[in-house]
Amino acid sequence: MRFGGSGIPSFNKGEQLTVKVYTTSQMADTDYVAFHWARNTFGFHRVPFVLESQTGMGPFERVYTKTFSIYQNHLTGCFNSFISASTHESLYNDDPSKFASDEVGIPYKILN
Image (cartoon, rainbow, N blue to C red; front, side, top):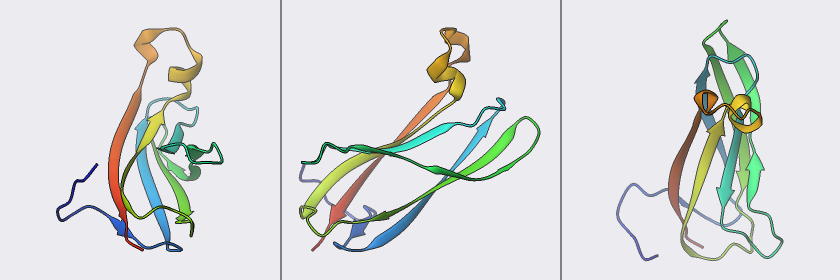
């Protein structure tokens, strides 16, 4: 809760940022990419990314983007979140051999 140090992304309230996620998949179905954070007073805690581009014929190289605005009521301090990327097969198929999912944790600071 009280981590510090250099290299942790820091943002001000009202600031806007764009995050890009690059995935590689053998499956033709698009992946599901989402940003997750602690639930706030409105109950929201997950938003999907939008598929920006796709290249390849298997493996498929995909780029997902999401633009965020740090809302003015965000608390000041240190927080954590994560980005998840899962294939369609991982979510809608019972075969465990088709499971493919990645998660990356992201600590961040809100300065003022």
